[in-house]
Image (cartoon, rainbow, N blue to C red; front, side, top):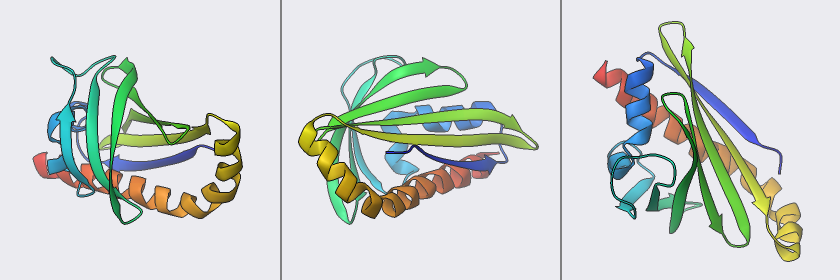
Length: 150
């Protein structure tokens, strides 16, 4: 699948946006599609942090385990999900921008087996629009939260 890249300009400091995207334990309070978070690792958020996230996707609740695979504060982290014979990778990046911060999210899906590759060819074109809408909804919610705090 070709990566999906979306961005939004937030009128808030990079520190404010970084806090919003890395306070994983209460992200369900900022992101309407996230219904519950269960932290699986203790301590601060960083490389190797794991959590179980329940969110509404494609009209249904689903629960997945995520792990931070790359962590470069205060500008970028990558979370990975392995589910249904696919690896899903979401990278959140912060960049300075006029009057604030540009928040980008890059999303990649990679099938891990032959059947998953076949299904990806069939299903991914149908799902791209819904995935883009979900990511944009998350970015919009983070923007609203951060700008309300500024």
